[in-house]
Image 1 (cartoon, protein in one colour):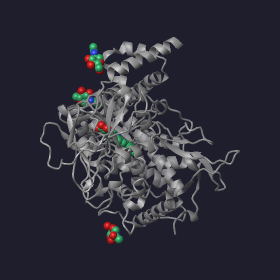
Image 2 (cartoon, protein in one colour):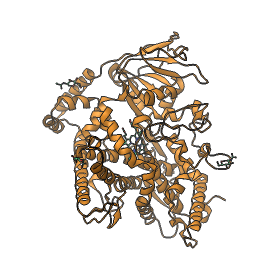
Image 3 (tube, helix red, strand yellow):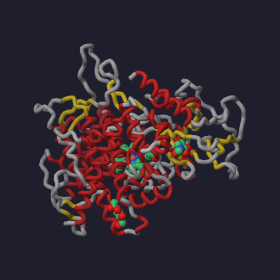
Image 4 (spheres, protein in one colour):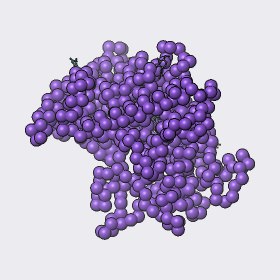
Length: 622
Ligand code: HEM
Ligand SMILES: *[C@@H]1O[C@H](CO)[C@@H](O)[C@H](O)[C@H]1NC(C)=O
Ligand SMILES: *[C@@H]1O[C@H](CO)[C@@H](O)[C@H](O)[C@H]1NC(C)=O
Ligand SMILES: *[C@@H]1O[C@H](CO)[C@@H](O)[C@H](O)[C@H]1NC(C)=O
């Protein structure tokens, strides 16, 4: 066994070395020294690198040269103008890396995250309307029961005397997120919120950490046939690979079964207005108006132009993709928000008061009868829920300071020149090589050796790491308190939105960027990030922005509004035999993963333990 392991590791190391075409970037781009012969600086960036990532940008600026596997080099970018080019203007040049696309294809099939160019554009065009505001408005009441179920599951665990109990909220947020996607997108329920259920699928989507294998994926997919791929997985002493194979099988099998059922349903009894009766187990209740995204896509397939139809494989691919892209990210986001509110009782009380007022107002306007205790059961309609100023501010601020997905990457398909620009803030700008340099481009590039250069050429094929984290923490754009969690930055002095309008005006339509006024948060004198969600990079921007960002926003707001109305959350108070309390700590390794730090915790197991109790009158702000 030991020999096989050594042999396999040697083989992997050899492949890695063959595959990583070494690209040297110009010496004049500043960056940290190589810190490890094999991993360069990657281990610092991807293993709990919050401080390191912020330091990189602080010290070297918006475009940094870093060292990667076996002497390779990449750019680490957080500069707003550079990102305008990468994410929007020249997005056709900055494509997904080979390993991202092929790895996704291997795992999910032909979904949005595994296609490029025309095929991707076609898929987006078909899918975008299903994720629009109009559709979210329809979907909200359909998925409200998920939040209510989450609330009753949590309440059922609390002691009868009104005292508090420590609950790890992370698994509940994960189960809730799975139900949101399955009911909202797939039109199916896994009953993931039933405590006795442990569904294969729910287990399956907890992706094993495969980052170290990713460089091999293009090679494996292209050069090794399916037969040998399966054999290889059997032979290689890598558990993560076997887990991955299991996941792919479960996920694909489940998506196929759901699709089969939905098609049968649409073909037989369904009426044209989308009302249908379902019988089979696992399905939602009878006479359910279908608003879910897959039903919309299936219906659209029957009517639209043949050139714009999705094949069955593509539809299965979308099901796998939205599940993989939407569950873990939103579960981390709502857990983070609960943790943030548990650490800040004043903010939590203010939010709860806003929710109570909104629910009372809504009940009054609709003549809904109320006694003292039932205000919390009032369900807010989409437009009210989405425009509550303080709720909006805490959600935005949490997604800004703690982006669930903090590092993304792209490869540049052409050689580029990189230069400094003049402006209120001196930013670096990437320009297509060969095209005339804009007159802006007059400042020398910041040099590591003190040399002055007006522009430097970045070779074709260079990988660019997009630091969502560093962008969202950029002091030049967000102010000196950029790294602080301060929801008030989104509000004006009277506690209303800091911009004019009801709320969403700050965000871009899917596929382009927001054009807010220049005095909104994250927009300093017209310099802003090209994200779809205000000026944040949390959901990315351009043609590959997160298609589910409005879904995620709605889901998080609905969960928080439902839970905060009934429950009070605080940091865990239990102590161990030495008097230590649990300290929840979010490790940043590309995703943000919560653990309990030593000495109380093991620093490894993901969890968000919080003290929870039912709400009392003192839990509101005066
Ligand atoms: C807080 C939660 C979420 C965050 C932070 C998030 C973030 C992101 C980011 C950063 C990307 C771009 C990735 C890249 O191109 O490298 C992305 C893409 C994507 N997201 Fe989300 N996402 C979230 C929730 C969701 C939800 C709920 C869904 C589905 C309902 C979803 C579906 C997708 C899809 C399909 C893509 C690929 C889009 C494309 O390539 O055209 N996401 N997301
Ligand atoms: C094997 O993979 C490499 C890298 O992905 C590719 O360039 C090459 O064409 C492939 N060879 C075959 C025989 O498919
Ligand atoms: C969409 O319609 C086309 C042509 O009728 C068909 O080949 C394809 O399988 C359909 N796609 C799905 C997902 O049913
Ligand atoms: C805050 O915004 C609201 C609504 O846009 C506006 O009516 C109010 O005057 C603003 N308050 C301040 C102090 O700017």
